[in-house]
Length: 374
Ligand code: UD1
Ligand code: UDP
Image 1 (cartoon, rainbow, N blue to C red):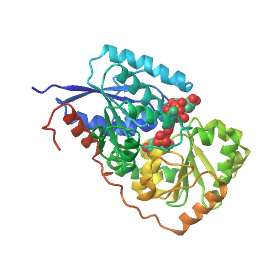
Image 2: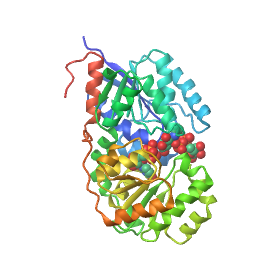
Image 3: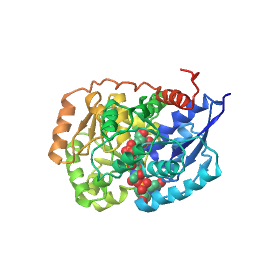
Image 4: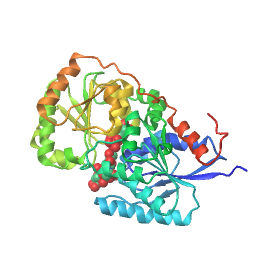
């Protein structure tokens, strides 16, 4: 006889919300087979980093908010663990599903694994091979203790094989972030953020920066801004500022000068629809974000990644992404190349808006529900 399985969906930080939205919806379409319990860890808590995405993407209100907030890595990870353990002690659940690579991801996976609750990891197997990135540590450890590993691109499977992960646990399902993008693209197109900022289509660059290696160190940040001068000489740069990055801008004379000259336009973190709308009409997107590399690939907008590595190589082989690094001369050269070319791109395999349904199918198989709808 069929039994309803309760899946805990964990979300904590901005990029988690776009990933959880289609999964919650796919499980909702299979009510009776699955029930979900949405846990917000509270890693991100400002409205502009959290609530706005629930409102825009129609994510159900979290059943539980752990309200953990900011802190050092140990404080934040431990805070989530202690609070999440209480949840699992109090609730009868069949699986914990975590997404991405943030501290909330590893914290909840670790608690579940130790309590004997199966763990599913969405966006498994991505590797930058740079252990100085906190996310890389979170990825490697989460994958080691997961029972189901859902991958977004072919590179992930090889990475997991090399780490000794049993291939029967690994399922190539596509990209839930792209499910969300495709579902909301038309609404994003209808936003008028560019007009409100006085920007013409293809007449501006869009910038996001929040990786510790780029924004926590004063000299590294200054060097990046120096590289951006080549872009700013041609088009204004719109910069929705992540809270982590705010102090770096205030400290950097080069950045404040660029702001004063009107070439760097600082705005608060944007809602998803406004941000996607701005991405789609930009001449170029400059970023150190993981998700933005993927979204620009589907939108067909050139993306320059201001990092030395990427865990998402398919965005380069199939997409519009170029790995530029942080050297000012390299950024100037990449911008010249962008101006000289259009950005034809293929859609990576299975980035088709149906990843969450494939995940639900695999879950049904995992729990012995072979009649899962396709
Ligand atoms: C986190 C993730 C990173 C992800 C990013 C997405 C980890 C280790 N890092 O980085 O992988 O790419 O989220 O945006 O999990 N702050 C606020 N308001 C908030 C949240 C944070 O002001 O709502 C400020 C606090 O000063 C905090 C700082 O931002 O100390 C950093 O927040 P934190 O969640 O620790 O890391 P992120 O840099 O946001
Ligand atoms: N994003 C947004 N508003 C912004 C900047 C980014 O809605 O001002 C979205 C972006 O479209 C993508 C996600 O946030 O869906 C990426 O999150 P982030 O860059 O914070 O994290 P990462 O992907 O690097 O982990």
